[in-house]
Image (tube, rainbow, N blue to C red):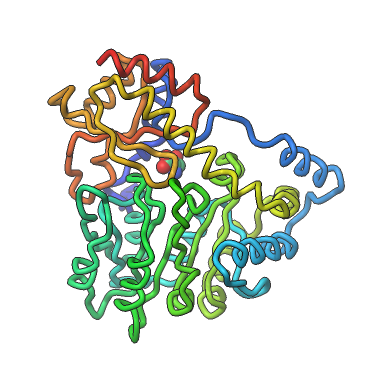
Length: 380
Ligand code: GLN
């Protein structure tokens, strides 16, 4: 059989590769982004409760109403605007299903989608699967801020969507109020949609407010916003995400979602709806991670790694150019095998795979995990 690959340049993701390697070499895994501490027993208890109550059959296609109501109230509480429970919220299998369903529904062959470069590794293949093209606009150095002039210069008659990600994986950068107004100006009077990946919305540091596109009346009319309970509640394996979009876009997105995953785990949806009633359950997440970031920076102080300040997410970039001349892929493999700490090489997130000798470390870990990793890294 002659198989014509739809993604000829894609292998397994770097996260799969590095987690496998970490396992093989018994290295501390600061590569793939997932917490090594437990989910709240109260939340687990609620899932168990609803499974015992018999919530074990298909949920409604867009998500259970009580969870959509809770998401709507949370959105109003955080960003001052309440999405419509029936028409503007859909619960998805992680944010990646949300992005996949949205792009599949809204992007046609030949369209162009502007993404930031570096970007989360899934965006470009998802765009390419629609026969569309991802146009990367380099983020500015040294702070990975968005170059709005660069974005403007890439807009053509084929541009259908601008994808942003704040807080940004892999850099940890966040956008400001000014960035939101730039995005408003660029898209005003155009048919360009925005896809804003905000899965780390509750992990922003140093007293900043998360600048969701949902704060802007002009932007939310054209935006699909994705979020993730996996990130917020330390349960990445539960695959619980959602998206918010205006009803005209949501009608199209649900046409795909219904034939993609159809519905999401029922009991977990009820459990999360209960858990969201206490705002501290999501408001206390940022200070918890800020303490971890600061702890990681403190224990890494004695090392020759140079941190790039993280304003959000649970990732910390570190420049290792004072330690080695090796390329970042080779260096991260060597570190996993020989030093016993797995990380993600930053070059994989760039369209041109540029190598600036920077690694991404996940600090969503217990302090003893971070301290054990730092001890090994400080010896380098
Ligand atoms: N989002 C996670 C990260 O950035 C990875 C998820 C995955 O393995 N696909 O590390």
